[in-house]
Every structure is written in structure tokens, then in C-alpha cells.
Length: 88
Image (cartoon, rainbow, N blue to C red; front, side, top):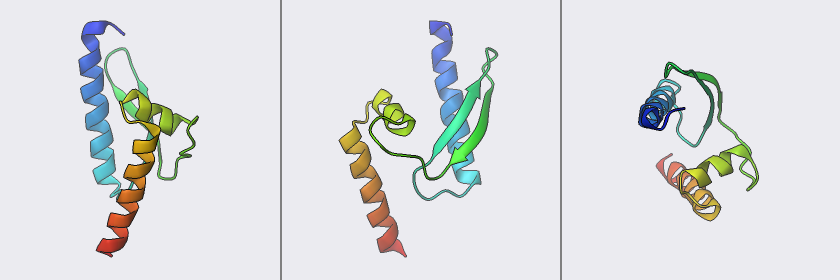
């Protein structure tokens, strides 16, 4: 991937993930397995609504790459669950 193309990929990935999240009516955390093409096309292969959240798994490692520490990730998931419980 060329450096100048990186912002294009990031925007397309974010847009695809947000659209799929809304279409699937997800109300918690999820992991999307995606594939990217050299022509900047984004394909969602799978939506995993119950990804493993161990520190050495893809979900947690992806959060780390997005500047979200493991502890912060777990805190966000817990707060999301508490918020959901209180809204029922």
C-alpha cells in the first residue's frame, strides 16, 4: 500500500464498518473480518459479534493499533454492557 493511499483505505474501512454495524443493528462490540483490494475496495467477510477479547487475540491487538490500551478496551466493553443493562 502506498503511503498516500493509506487515508483512502482508512476512510473506506471506517465507512464500511459503520454501515455494516448499522445495517446489522449491532448494539455492542463486534469484530469485522475484512479484505482490501489494491483498487481500494473493502469486502466484509464476516461479522463476529462475540470475538475473543484475550490480550493476545486479534480484537485486542487491533484496539492496541488504534491506540486503545487493553485495559481501556475492557473498561469500554464493561461500560457498554452496564449502559445496555440500564437501558432495558
